[in-house]
Image 1 (tube, rainbow, N blue to C red):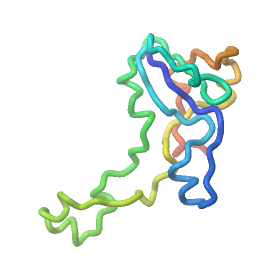
Image 2: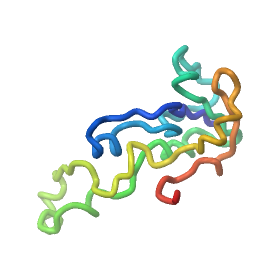
Image 3: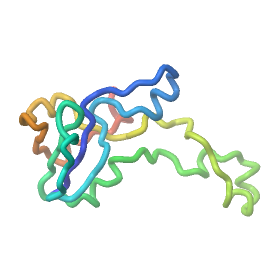
Length: 134
């Protein structure tokens, strides 16, 4: 079983770009571990939820905690792409299409069923992609 640490609050920054790209938002997936993990005393409400997904190893949902929407070559300048020795070492900044610090989330309506410690059991299909939310 996978266990997901979900943020229970919105973090903000006055700069809207930094806010959108680097601040965890309500229901974002912060961390993924296998069942049996001993969560810390602060990894509970009011700051976090723990979502358990039975029958699914953590490795299967590990990618849900990241926002890999593009590969570096997709937003690398064409002049750099044309010279392999340059493109190998080319470092880019923030991707222009990045939606947030995390791409996947758990809908807040599902987290309302959590117990007093913030623990809830859900299905893998309950993880939603921010790219497909209206």
